[in-house]
Length: 138
Image (cartoon, rainbow, N blue to C red; front, top):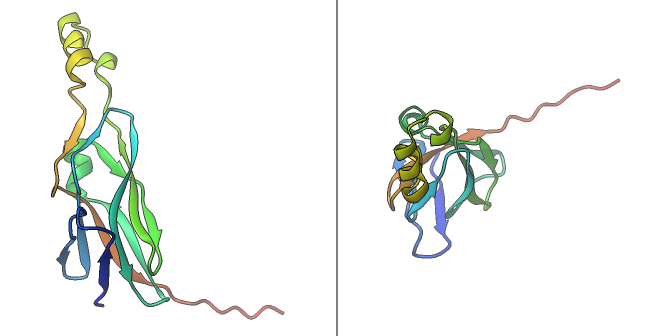
C-alpha cells in the first residue's frame, strides 16, 4: 500500500518510511514531566482509501528506554495525525529521600523528565485494511 501525506506547514518534520510503516518524528523540543500527559501534533494527514485506517502506536524502544507511552489511536482518510503521550516514570519525591537530590530536582527538573529534540523518533504509524462484516439478521 502506498499513501501520500500532506504537511500542514513547513515547520513539521516529514515522517520516515520503512516499508508499510512510517516513523513519526518530533517537530520540535518536547518535555514531558513524570505522570504528565501531552498531546503531540505531527502536522500531517494521509490520503488513504475509505477501507484503510492508520494505527498510531508507541515506538517499541521508547517505553522500555525512557518510560513514555503513546495511547493507541486510529485515523481515517484526511484526519490530522496526533497522539497522547504519557510519562509513566515516578517523580523524584516518591523514591529519592536525600534532601540535596530532591532540592536539585525542584530547581532543575526531575531525573525522570523526558526530553525529545526535533527529529527524534517518537511513534510509529501502521496501516490496516478494514474488512466489512455482513450479518444475516432474521
